[in-house]
Length: 223
Image (cartoon, rainbow, N blue to C red; front, side):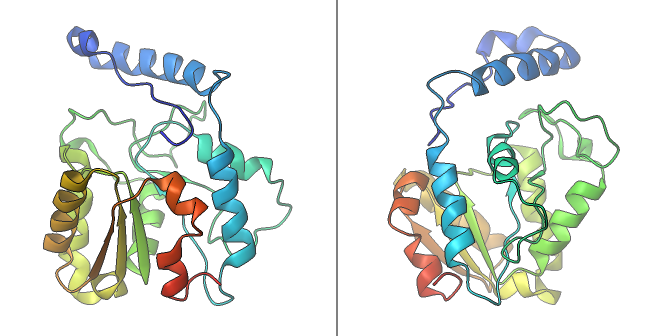
């Protein structure tokens, strides 16, 4: 949303078959990504700050439940010849699938909001991202609601492992401009990770980045 990509699945597509709906989503969302009013400067600012300010002992893993690949495109535009120390991977993990034209057994299946958690099957992409999240000392959650079953599945999986991994005692920074949504998401994460430190931040992603991501700086992950 900070990039002005506000496309959503039309309500009248509910009558379509799952396969046709997915094909239409991929087609229309790709066109929406290339609209002239889509501005990725906030992503570029975010990545620049991670590149220039990440503490020497830290590295970041970028994970999304969105279908678009604006973040991945901006990383590729940075033109790295070797993986920089501030990134665990230059690949943005798409847990719910992506509209990228990349057919591979590595990638996660394309999941709709109405899909069941059982439709999420194991893939290398999701497994690698999940295992690295379990080892994280800090997680920043941006704009998520965990309303749909496929996203609640992720919280449930973290809850099953939280006693035995660093994530169980990690710092979890939750960003949401809507106070009610912020409270609800923070409570859901706390229920899954009861020993974690939840730090709710009532702010948009764009404003948070503009302010220099102060919570990450205060925690020592950014200089």
